[in-house]
Length: 126
View 1 (cartoon, rainbow, N blue to C red):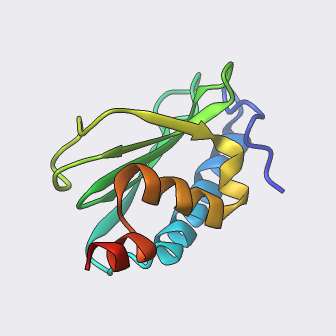
View 2: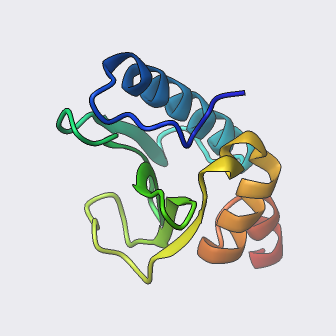
């Protein structure tokens, strides 16, 4: 398992693994949520040497960002609603633990509950 809590600060190899693994998990999350191709993009911002940077899944109705910005609280996944992929402010911020990246079905359930997107949400809305 990947150690999400090992700092990327001043550790280029850890930062590379962090971004690669986070992108992979966000692709799995998109598949778990059954997001249609073209309805989302995955971006990576490596930022400066002293920080982890962020990896973001930006859907038409949700914004999910992974970073080591909540290390003291154990939170590092930001989930919020948005109105399209040009909306970077979106709705209220909700945070969950970075370790949820090791349990994609649980993370998908959190995203569905917060943002109302994904396989089960789409069925309820229909």
